[in-house]
Length: 469
Image (cartoon, rainbow, N blue to C red):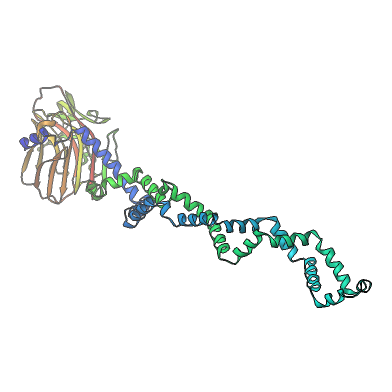
């Protein structure tokens, strides 16, 4: 195992502790963002737009709009027809007459009583009745009704409106106007003129002449909104992890127990053994231990520091014949445990630990019952890094790679039923099956088995957590 671990470390497949820890923090942060994104309206909208924008219909319409040319458009044909009609001289005269004041005066006079009277008198002057009366002697004619009508007609014929009217209807322009009015040209012109001068036509022409016309479309608005959402932090995180399996563990497990060890949390940890709390309320050492456990040997600040010191200390020790006996020791140490606060059954326990192996010193983070067995270590050390497993029948020692001895590393124990898997910085180092049928609490402790060369040793734990399904 050490050689395999050596090769993995040599090839960079065992991540550095700080790098792995940072990756874990970022993954947890991203998972929180991913979970938030899954529930967001922005993601719903992004998915809607993604389906629209990547559809054949959208792509086809975008290409169509970008390839549009004014010369190929219906609007271009309409404008061309408009210009053609404008060049028609007779139509030009027709339009000028229609727009002129003379034509308005013509209509006014044409409907007047004065013109009607003049026309009636003109017809009378041409009648046989008038011609017969005209043959009378001058004095007799002057006494007739025909003479009075002639005088009235003569007066009216000199009126400005009547002379205007007579001259206007004889004009070339009026005759052309009357000619054109009997064709379809006026109707064609009116229709095309309304189209060309409509806001709709102007907008369509402007759109077609604009080389960036796509930017004016609803499609572009959808694309702009889509791209903005695509750059949204939540959406980016969702897209990054959507098709991967990096969140499988975070989705399956929840943090059930955790401590950053900034201070002693008495709701999580005991500093004395649980089975002596109701008697002398102190910790005790095993028969062969050379140390006493004291609360002063566990410090909490930026993590837990459990110290083993060469000094005189007094404490209880278990004696098989005499029970708990007070004794003098040459070493002091510390321990904490989660008994009565938290018990582990199945899941994951992991911790960031700096443990330094020393001959004669047994240090460990482990799981156990009040009777001492089973005993399953997350990480331990004596003359080297190790993990002990001890059920009711036998004790086994799992040798760990020594590369992280005296350095920070993240140790992990995964338990699924009877299967246990140990990992260091994410790399598996051992796997075995052990029958465990009872919940176990967490212990962090160090005991002196032989005289030590150094006067002080420290077991450091920056954080510890337990994940359960």
